[in-house]
Length: 283
Image 1 (cartoon, rainbow, N blue to C red):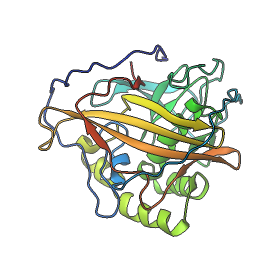
Image 2: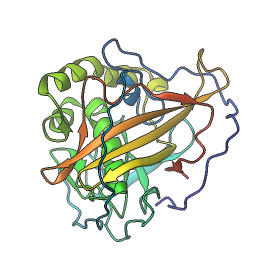
Image 3: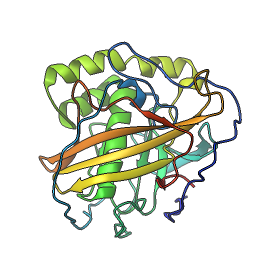
Image 4: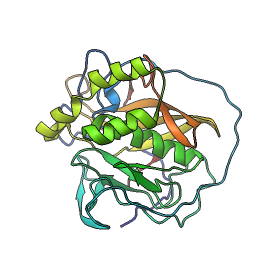
């Protein structure tokens, strides 16, 4: 089942609480964990970095689907996340690649065509599309995104989700091949943030979810800044509900998007009562 890529706008009113729950993991060295994107995104508790690049566009990439882990093709069923958004359960724990048949949306901030969310390895929930990838699974990691704004957004969410939420094998693959930055800083971030996987597996209330809204705030063929909105979350600090908006920076190098990791990026999320203007990435 594929979600519609129709673009709508979030309401500007405050969310109505459906239940009170604490959905953030706070770590000492890296940041706060996000309820819907991944418990992990907010585990990077620092500021963000920015860069200026000329705005250019490129066509979407097209590649034949391939698989890199056992489990067979297709899906075994469908479930929902904490906000009752549909999530597909692939037979292959590393994910089910979708045929790349739809064109990349011309609007930089349109959602990828044929967007669905898949739950991988019993925890990370990762976006897949029919327009911008991923197009392959290598060493248990979905990858191969188009060199487009949508491809960059898909890559950022997927890379961070898999790095901090997947089992050790796929996580190491991500760390070695899909991150950009100082090796020691990346290793320090991993040591501080990787425990969120076990915590989330132990406590379902801290498990991963889908992202509610995305904005590609800066894009060129070599650099992208992507803002992601998660929630609403209800906790002691936000009893009426709030969304967390985090920023991811990516670079195109060695034929793929890589997530930029520094001592301050990704950064602490900004809490908002609403995320009007961001493009919904769920139905």
